[in-house]
Length: 261
Ligand SMILES: [Zn+2]
Ligand SMILES: [Zn+2]
Picture 1 (tube, protein in one colour):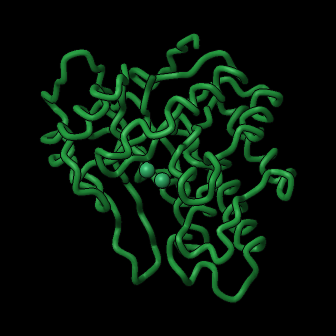
Picture 2 (cartoon, rainbow, N blue to C red):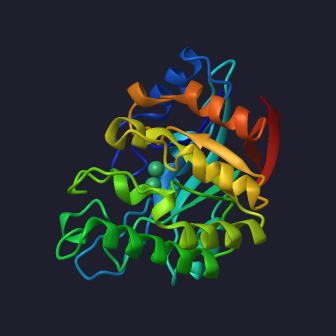
C-alpha cells in the first residue's frame, strides 16, 4: 500500500517530523510514501502565503531513510489562475518526484474559512469552488495529479456537512476531468474526508467516471498531518482502485509508475 499525500512541519499546518511520519508508514505496512508539503500562494490582502523555505524542505527530507520504505519527495502546490510562474520557479529549486495540484482557494477564500460559506447556500458554495477548480486546471500545466476534487465539503464550516455529490454537478465535474485527462494528469483518492463527511475525496463514482472518460493515472493519499493518520483508510482506498482500475500509481521523476492491485 501507498500514501501519496502527507504533511510534516515543513507545512504551515503540521507539527509532525518526517521521521515520525515515515516510521508510522513503515509500521503500518506501507511500501512507499510521498511527502507533499503545502506550497500555497493567496493574493487576498489579509492572507499570508502558506509556503515553505526550500532549505527547510531539504533539511527535513534529504538523507531521511527508513529500512523497508521507499520515500519520495513531492509537493502539494496550490493551483490558482495566476501562479503559473511561481510554480515554474519553485520547481527549479530542487528535484521533485511528484506534484499534487490542489485548489485551496475559490475567489481568494479557503473553504476552511467560515466566510467562504456566508451569504449563500451550500450548493452555491460548492459550485463556486468547482468553477474555480475548472478555471485553474485550464490554465495550469505543470502538475501531475489533481488533489482532492471535492475538498470544499470537508470544511468544518460547511454548515450542513453534506458531501459534494457528483450527481449535482455532473456537467462541471465532467469538464474538470476532461481537461485534466487531455493534459495527461491524474486524479487522487484522498481519505481525509471519510471521518469528516463520510466519503473519500472524491468518492468512487467520480473515479469510475474518470475512467469512463479516459482517465488513467490515479494516486491514493491520506492527507495526514500527524503520524496517527498516516495510511488511514488505505485498505479501503486500495479496494476502490482495485475494483475500478486494477492498479494504483506512484511517481518517480514526475512520471507515473503503475502498480497492479
Ligand atoms: Zn489540500
Ligand atoms: Zn494536503
